[in-house]
Amino acid sequence: MKTWENNYKNLKRYNNYPHDFVVSETLKHFKNVNKIKALDLGCGGGGNTKFLAEQGFLTYGVDASQTAVNLTKKKLVKSKKKKIIKANFENLPFKKNFFNLIIDRASLTHNTESSLKEKIIPEVGRVLKKNGIIISLFWSSNHSDKIYGKRIKNEKNSFCNFKKGSFKYSPIVFFSSNKDLKQLFINYEFLNMTKIQEKPTIGKKTNNEYFLIVVKKK
Ligand SMILES: C[S@@+](CC[C@H](N)C(=O)[O-])C[C@H]1O[C@@H](n2cnc3c(N)ncnc32)[C@H](O)[C@@H]1O
Image 1 (cartoon, rainbow, N blue to C red):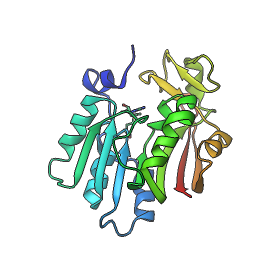
Image 2 (cartoon, rainbow, N blue to C red; image 1 turned 90 degrees about the horizontal axis):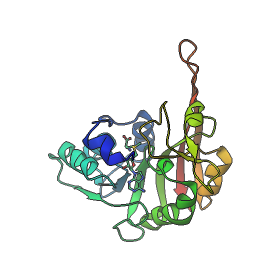
Image 3 (spheres, helix red, strand yellow; image 1 turned 135 degrees about the horizontal axis):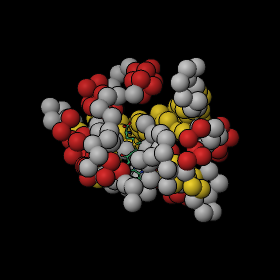
Image 4 (cartoon, rainbow, N blue to C red; image 1 turned 180 degrees about the horizontal axis):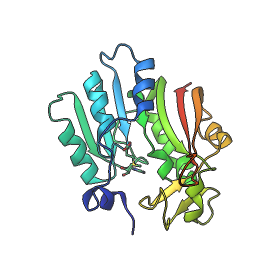
């Protein structure tokens, strides 16, 4: 079975560096980080978490993979203000209204649409303060590699068992539309929603398409 733990532990597949959108949007919205609590949701290899800690945020990270948690902790040895925990997004071990900022670099999008709607988005909303911000990346329903996966039963746009392509090592992918995201984040104000289409003009005929969003809890 494909799992994130296997990706990290055995295949050593993870990002070491922060994502450019995470960096630019975080710096845009948080000039003063004194006493500001930030959560890296699905911290993976810890690149984005390290960026948050270096900026001076009170930095938290969660991931379902123990190896991801260990990798992230290792990146933050010099930082004192941090807490990295193994947890599932459905049950976050934090008090309500705790965070000012939640970073989600392609972690929520690796859950089914139904679990996002019913459990995960409400749970994320519980731990985020009013006017708190989520910076997120979701794969688009127009992504060309969707065809390599198998649609999950009773799900409209969530896929698994990818035979090849960009999601070969992903257990689950929810591919969303603009409308799906508006619906998912219905209790939030959209500060930014950008659709990125990476269509190479030479070489492979792929369309790496995704949404970058910034939402504020109302
Ligand atoms: C595509 S990776 C992204 C990792 C990291 N954010 C980055 O930018 O490199 C998705 C991560 O989210 C975690 N994840 C996905 N769904 C999860 C859930 N329901 N609970 C906890 N972790 C989850 C996975 O373990 C994995 O580390």
